[in-house]
Length: 96
Image 1 (cartoon, rainbow, N blue to C red):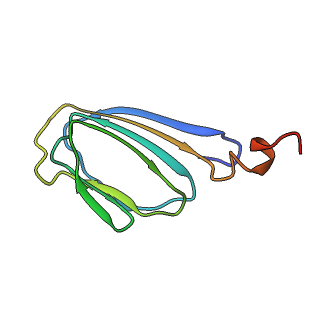
Image 2: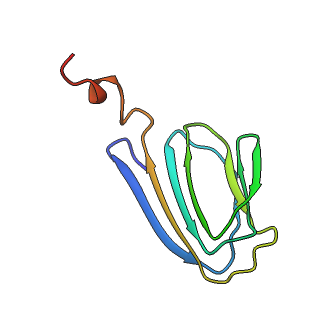
């Protein structure tokens, strides 16, 4: 993502669901389908996910997923990243 982008969009199908622990300045929406049994790690929370997962991750928060008990070979994922200042005070209150 560059400073000129409003958001970045990724859509992909995977046969294994592992995404290493990382963090970034952007906010991130994650939609994951068909990865039941995988573990989601966000900050200090670790949970096993179901068939449908929708998560909003804040700026500079560590996140990652590991296959754990997930065995699906047809995992669908959509990621939308957007700058942490996209919805700043000027955007939310334009008439101030």
